[in-house]
Length: 146
Image (cartoon, rainbow, N blue to C red):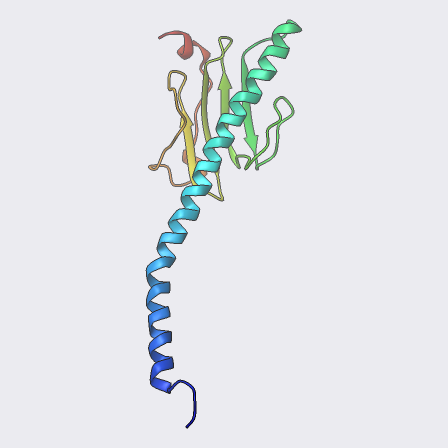
C-alpha cells in the first residue's frame, strides 16, 4: 500500500491556500498603509517637538521666535533636526506663542498630514492625493486672531 496524497487532494489544498491569500492580502496591505500613515503623523509630532526645542533656544539667545520651515525632497532642514520618516515636501510654521501649523506630504504613505494653528491634533487629509495639493502658508497673524 502506497502512502501519499492524491492529485485531487493536493489541488484542493492549493485552492484553499489561494482563497486564503485572496482574502488576507487586502487586509495586510491596508494594515501596512495605515501603519505608515500613523508613523508619519508621529513624525509630524516629532517636528513640532523639535521646533519647540528650537524656539526655547532662540528665546534664550534673543533670536526671532517665529519659525517657518519648507521641506525639500525629504531632507532634514538645518533649523530643526528630527528623526523618523521625513516629509518629502511641505511646510511647517510656528508662531511666537508656540502655535503650530503644518501641511506635509510623504510619498511612502501617500498621505498629506495637516494641522492648523488652533487644531489640537494632526490629521490625514484624505482629499489630498498628491504633493502639489498638500500646501499651507505661514500667516502668523492668523494664529493670533483667535
